[in-house]
Amino acid sequence: MPEMKTFTREEVAQHNTAKDCWMIIDGDVYDVSTFAKFHPGGKQTLLELGGKDVTDDFWGLHRHEVLDKYQRLQKRRVTDA
Image 1 (cartoon, rainbow, N blue to C red):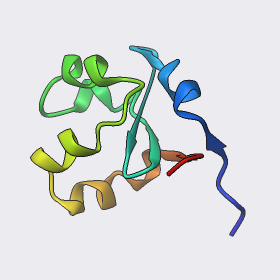
Image 2: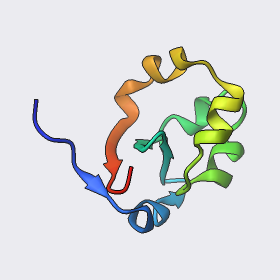
Image 3: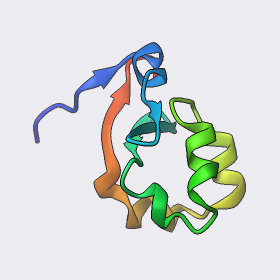
Image 4: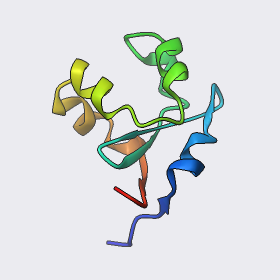
């Protein structure tokens, strides 16, 4: 398996718009740009958290199966994860 690309937290923070929205969960970076409109909690929720580490927020609301279901959204790792 090829090594997954890494980004700094500062680089991830730049991806915080409706067309380019990434978030960090457990050190993994997820591109939720296209998923946001389908998010059961609403698009705005994801956009407000775009570019941030949302690990605590995510696990407070979701089970692990959610990450399994949307694994295809995982793009990268954070360098200091």
